Length: 326
Image 1 (cartoon, rainbow, N blue to C red):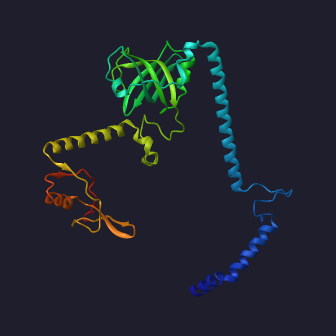
Image 2: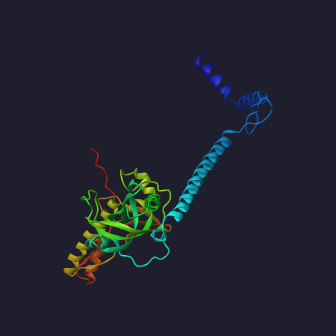
Image 3: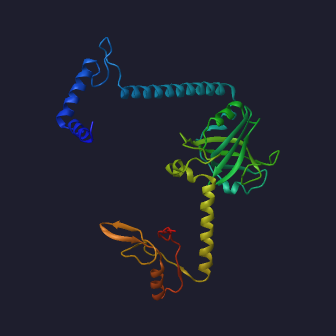
């Protein structure tokens, strides 16, 4: 077939009448074969099977029902163990753990880590990570505002008390009372105190649910971290970064204040570009054209000319860096 013949055949195939005829012919064939039902397929006995969407929905519902049934079974088992503990543990032991009823006075954890051995303390913190060694020994790292200390539950606690604590997920807020003591061996983990807490009482303040990632171990993907930024900012490394930056800015301010500089705040939106040699950030400000400030230089010069004397500002500098073409 020549090139002209192929083009003619293609043009005939693309005619609206040809397409409609082909569509009707295909629909009739599906109907004659029992596949023309809008919601699914016909079986030989005339009954309809589920469509793909219905099957997917059904599978999802079955999975949710299975997960809920497993949760119910776990909760039933826990309630059974709680009843056994109520029958076996003494009233004094039962009062040492459970839901918090009376908050009482607490000491910030940053002060606890500075105290000496033998002090009895009560503080509130998150469970950073747990390491259950046996039914009578459980190590917990408590964290509050980036400060961490290790706690231990041992022979002084009942088996059910330790099991109850082990079930608490990471990031759960608890109130702990105990005594500072020197551990049998030197602590190897990165903690803020060489001492550990011998836990006497521990109460649940607020539990955590469905954490997208753990704050210990390897870091998750950045998209996961940014999608859960509040949890990500709790990480000790991020807390340390923020504290270091705050301390550096405090040193800058202290030095400049001693030299009689005055801190000012200049506008960050301007009606025109004020610097040359760099690309500007153009924004729409209520229907008007505006630019993000690239430098507070002009505003500081105005302040000096207005007899403010020495001035300074701590603020972001917004500009684009153009890549050089080699």
